[in-house]
Length: 240
Image 1 (tube, rainbow, N blue to C red):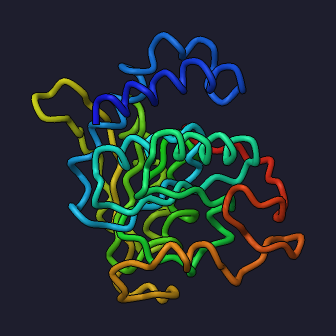
Image 2 (tube, rainbow, N blue to C red; image 1 turned 45 degrees about the vertical axis):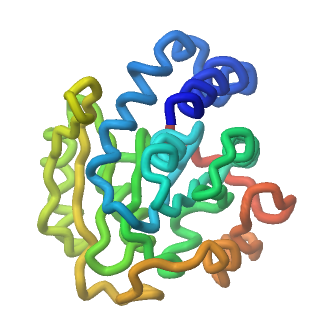
């Protein structure tokens, strides 16, 4: 995957900066601060899984995980039009056949996806993130939230809200790549087994199910895959 990863790094450092997807100060630290940090999470994934990357932004960690886990099916969920467009172009340029972009908010697709894993990086505080992500998981599915040095304190603050949502196993994991060259601090927790979401008990859903959600947003528009002109733009800042 190294040639594709190098190509992705160039896209982030050049096109991403030019289009305001990545901050100018990040161009020189794409590898150590972003790509390797996300790569450390790959070994926490099942070999085969349906993964939804919430607030995918520049594709971190979603695109990195799609590169490292070719047997996973990855949905890059992003509400902002310009970011979704960047993601769509990047997926095509990298030739990622196991990834697709859906322009929608997580809350608009709650109960309509039965993902095995939901990932998030720099999206929201844990209490809010839990409410956004649990509705996208199958019962027993896992959230992997990449956090920084304050992960333990953030988790402690969020525990009452997590308990109200039925989460009892939240913990901080220090993920490391093979050889320990890359590390990441991840808060992980599991969706309750009794959760009554659409697709409960299903190991995964097809991307066609993601493309055609029935739920509509607050303006009455359906959530749609990136590239469509339909759907309501969303001002909430995505992660990555």
